[in-house]
Amino acid sequence: MQDLKYELKKQIIEELNLQDIKPEDIEDDAPLFGDGLGLDSIDALELVVLMEKYHGIKITDETVGKRVLSSITSMAEYIQEENAKSK
Amino acid sequence: MYITASSTISHQPTFRNKGFSSTISALEPLSELVTPDYSAFIQAMERRRMSQVLKMAITCSIDCLEQAGLSQPDGIIVGTSMGCCVHTKNFLDKILSANEGLLSPTSFIVSTHNTIAGQISLLLKNHSYNMTHTQNSLSFEQALIDGMLCIENGSSHILVGGADEEEDEIYNMKERLNDEKIHLTCGVSFFILSNEKGKQASINLVDVGSFGLINDFSGIIMEFLVSNKLSPEEIDMVLYANSEQEKTEELKTLFGHGKIFDYQKITGTYFTNSAFAMNYGIDILSQREHPVFGEGINKVLVCNNLIPENLGLILLANKND
Image 1: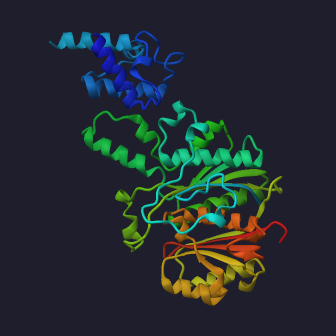
Image 2: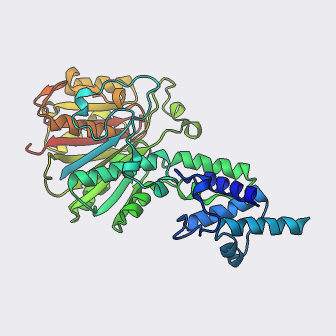
Image 3: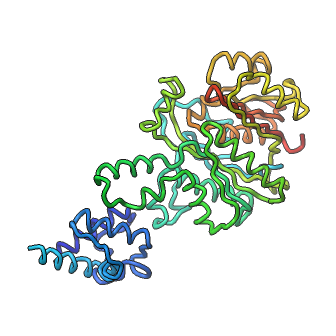
């Protein structure tokens, strides 16, 4: 789980071009939007693309998207859940 | 009408370097952009989605507003031939690599021509007139004409710029200009047009002309001068970019050999390099006694014939003339 979270942080930094931010700077449970990392609505779309590009997971439901993309932990848990379902 | 601020980022040390026309020389082959530290002008979270041309345009805009002592312009007008073409190429590449599947939105959002004027507006939180002109090698002249019309219709201060970035791969610029030896560069220049003289030195923007499908190069220039009640003898300097040697010979015949200067030697080639030439002219006019071109330069004509069928003319004068 920790490895997956670290990979997710690296992918987010690269895809969103978060300059001057290292994986260690992103807390697992901090909100990605608003007061936390400060991402915006365009970034939300980028995260949907990221989930499909790196993890083969499509997020098509807005409610699921809001819940899953709220923090690094929620993203990692969802990836694990979806991977378990497909096995 | 006055130009109360000007700012250029280019392959020359032009940014925040008043008097640069005295010190810069012809571009060396393989020259690179001379850029300021963008972090002093744009926050990291805002900068991360911006291409080079966007960062240049926003930095020049902020510099112009500071020079003119303004917080907001009454309009933002940009002339760009190729727009944000680097991101356009990225977007097209991603369509291919994603097999037309789910695409990253950022490349699309920042790849349109009006991204430049739009992003300046968003960062300044400016809700006034916002316009982008794309008219090939006359894009900047069209933007200037729009800016002049805004001032004539009652606006006080208009931010006008010319911006293009380097991306020859998809536009085959060398082929279109029929010259494999040209020095492709890029650059961004912004200006504040005002209805009143600025606190600092300001220059008169006397007139701008934009002509397509031309067939009488000298005749159009003469008509332009006559409409401004001027003769060629009254023009002290002509900054030109010519597509053909015979046009240069025509300029020599009209104005005299010693008065004309090929601005592409210093700007390099890009579709809105006449904006850089205009700032070069402003810098020359701002120095009553120019160390390179001498004294007594009060009227400068920028003559943009980068593409054979297009002719742009910009007439500048010292404010007391």
